[in-house]
Image 1 (tube, rainbow, N blue to C red):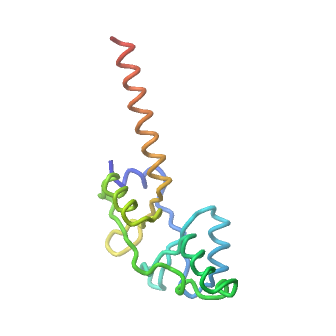
Image 2: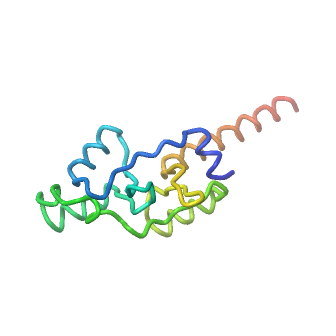
Length: 143
């Protein structure tokens, strides 16, 4: 199983913000979309960074409420770990666990094609386990 299969189920929609937007604007976007991270994109559509709830908490801890008026570019994580559609789920879980982050953009040919969260992986794993369980029950019932 790979990332392409997860994106096939959840879709390729990516919520993004521009780096000059304020942290307050990004927070509103996160709240409206009920998500935990947004991709920061340049005017050319290139990936510049990612802004997660953790980045926002760090910015608030450092600067207090005035951080909300700062541009997203000040709080975002600029060194973004990405994956490809062919990346296996096991490999992606290892990347997320070792890096201690919960969102990974999927990049193909320099463009963001989707984003996978730890929740997407958990949902996939649960569905996989349920399918195996059904298959075992069916096998036992036929025996």
